Image: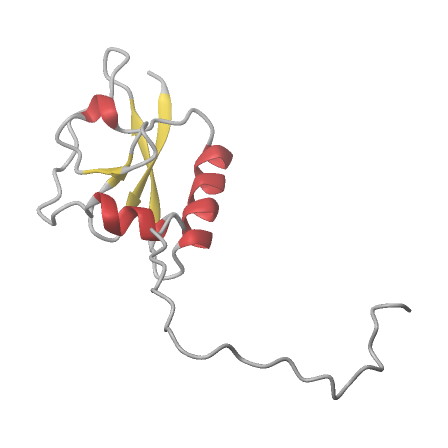
Length: 116
């Protein structure tokens, strides 16, 4: 029997091979790590992007070279938009510029010319 480590969050989701949370229904999509330190590093990276995230590292024995059946989470998976926010890939919306008269540039402080 081989031992593997998987990362589970506070919602019962598992960290997947596609770098997304999965619900555990298809255990082949769950990332199984052979070394505990790899799982610890994954938890560190995930929690550095989401400080409210709480994770556990589960130790499992493979059955015939595959993960055993996992408990399926009843909590819905985060959508792609929520996940993008967690990964720091928020879509940037640029607000339209307000039209108005141009702001005059004052020459009150000419002591800072950029030279040191």
